[in-house]
Image 1: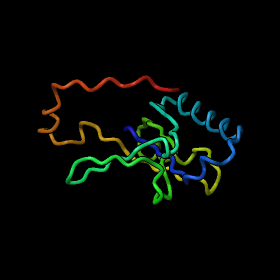
Image 2: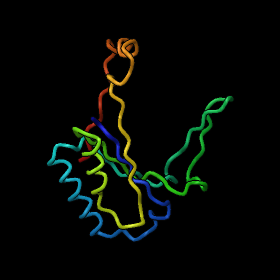
Image 3: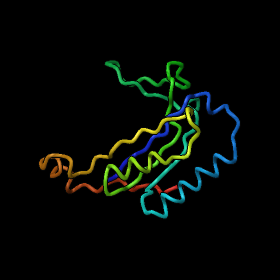
Length: 137
C-alpha cells in the first residue's frame, strides 16, 4: 500500500527562524524511513508565494499567483511511503518529528490500479506509465 503524507503548516512558518536541530531531527526520521524500506520519495515545498494556482471555470483555466490570503494552512512538504498496512502508515505519520502546535500531517492512500473496475484497468493495460523522476533522498 502506498501513502502520501502531507505536512500542513501555517504560511508564516516560512518566515520563522530555521533551527538546525529541527532539520537534524527530520533527517534522522527520513533515514529511519529509508532504512525500513518504507520511503519512496520526499520533498519540501517552497512557499506558495513562489507558486501558482490554476483554477478551472467555465471560461477555461485561470492562473492565480500566490500567496493566497485565504489559506490558513498550506502544504509544506510530502513523503510517499509504502507500508503493508494502513496502521503501519499511521504509525510512521505519528512519528514525524515536529514541534507541537506548528503543523499537522495528513495521510492519504494512493490509488492502485487494482482499486479500479476491471474495465478501467483494461483501458490502461497497454499504456506505459510515465517515467518517475529520481528520488531526492
